[in-house]
Image (cartoon, rainbow over all chains, first blue to last red; front, side):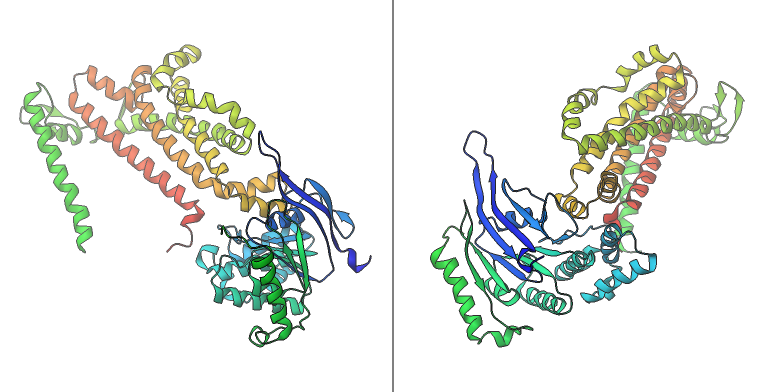
Length: 265
Length: 271
């Protein structure tokens, strides 16, 4: 298998039927090849269909036209090989941090023994530094911690792709920075293929290898693709004066606010 | 003792005195209406000012004279047995039906109109029909309770299922849960508090219905006992019956509330 054909989106279109009118075309003509272990950001104004695109990759939503292939197999529905980190974390509030992760691991890896199961759950709790909160219920921990559990839960089932739908969107900027650090640190150790939906320019440049810029909806599609040629590990403070960082940032800002400005936000 | 606790004890006592006073005034204006004192003596036993002697309803609540003459304890037990039989049937039928209605739009469309029409029908309207079908006191009382107390269980169970957030269902879809796993691991934990709210309402209705049902069916039970005392012109016992029904109902609701809280995940971790 060539690396270039890890995750492939072909001529993706999503239409929503409107009674008595023509279909609303949310996303159209999206072609994208994502390499293994690549970190991709999809950025665009609200309403550009970036979440719709992610939902089609996860299989939670079906495209109207086109095909999605993962490892040369067509995506026809949701599955644990495409783990999702939801914007609102979606932890089950009646289960503890430990139990939330355990539930996922148990289902996806039923062959594990009790000891192996416990080891695996603890490994991912430790990965996001939440040992002290493992027996807490989601309502008893902060928003940032909840999202860390969400990330741990998604990674614990050993996905081929990690799909993150504005994972830090609901958090304050300090907590967001902290979580970005967590994600980069985890990524240094375990290489995952990650797709992040975001509307934060700095987040996109800091985290990604490539930034996919979406045009405005309706009929949104990929406008530009930007390669971020920055070495890892990346340091957010040092990056502020890095010419490549500044170039990437300006390219995205110019795309979002000059070429595809949206004034009704 | 802090001020709030003191108020919680003192204020109901003030109202209690007011009730007793109003009752005494009522007893003066309505002929043969028992006074609070007479009623108290009729409950615990003794001799009234008029020289009437009472054995006391609660002096020996456990006596069994014969099949038709038993102490008030046995009357309550007989009523509770019917209530729990009907209530149990309501749970057995209502919870699964509510789950189906909550999960399937088609089932909801199919059943909803009939639930809305049958729900407001008074138990007294069902009684003659059910008596005609079963020709048996117990079965009639139990089936009346069943048919009037099942609605809140169905409605609340369905509501609980419908309130499962689509985010949780998305987690289940990504993990590829089977339909049974979805019910067991996602839907039931969310719906259980709603189911218990339905059960609590249902038990309240069942206890309301039993008094009316037993008055018409006769035999044994607290409802029949109250009606019987009316026929015996023992009006003080009617008041004793009312208070007893109220207190038993209060405890049923309290116990049901405690059980409901125990199964409600939202109550956990709150200390």
